[in-house]
View 1 (tube, rainbow, N blue to C red):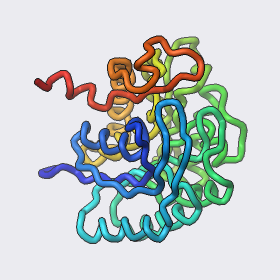
View 2 (view 1 turned 30 degrees about the horizontal axis):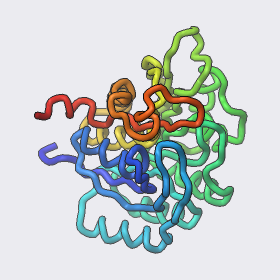
View 3 (view 1 turned 180 degrees about the horizontal axis):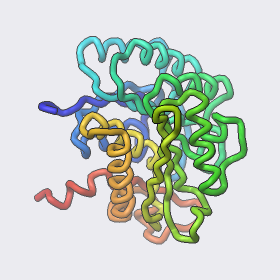
View 4 (view 1 turned 90 degrees about the vertical axis):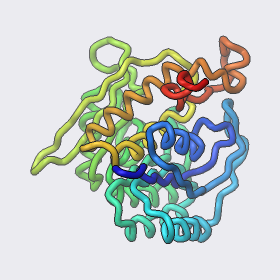
Length: 290
């Protein structure tokens, strides 16, 4: 492109800078995209947890979207925390009018711990966005929730559920298996499965990376989905963009311990109940400064 792609994140705010719109904007910048943001909720949180959420009214979320897109051309959209059914429906109205073909939906519904993050009506509204997205990036618990099936416990089940999500209406699926205990070969790998419809069939691509030994994993889901959104306008295909995004995230995880952000960073060797710091979004850039 002769100009940088403009990427929009629709998500909640994280004051600690590791997740939400802060992580998305850092990711966009690190990967050569100009970042814009529409905020759905304010949170009070740090690396140890969330203590409060202040939801933005749905009509004001819609006003942010309308005002932004009346002036700024958007090349890619990443959708994260939507908080309420009303906000999800407002975003759905926006997507139906949006002419772009890069829409990355991170269906923030269930934490990797299994804890539900949305009320049932809001989760159902987020599920209605799935056919409107170019690609969805659920974790294992979110995929199971969308399908109404048990959580996948092995790679064969991940493949099956990725195909099932396509059959249910998703255009593309990146089913994240980073928390899968059994990758099938006894090695410490993080395996994601990319599923795309090809003709009358389905093409599955396994994306593997070494499992990084770090507690500093806060915001990995936000970061991966925004990396895909930033890269897709700059790359020739979805597999190329997704593969590069995963490689970049793996490097950001490998460098995360150098940041020392939050209680985990101050204490060095973290114990039970201590924080999960952010990944290093600028790992490829900061060593070159100065």
